[in-house]
Image (cartoon, rainbow, N blue to C red):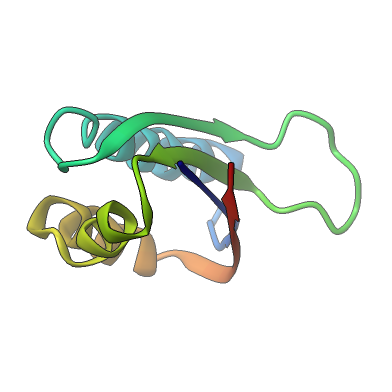
Length: 99
């Protein structure tokens, strides 16, 4: 199993705009479970502790294997959500852990 962890920085005009963008992204990402083959689980959440330097939101996704993760990257449903996130993200960091 592969655990895919991604953190994002967000550009927004105000806190309400930031929260709306994160909520829409989270809903889109979580809907991918059952759509993308090999995606077992997806958890998405906003930063819960206001510490300088923290990212604004993150996702943790579990995949059957590296092949499933590769398929996720190019799956049309994921690409659509990724393009939306691309309209407001300022930074991204990711790691993939083999469990």
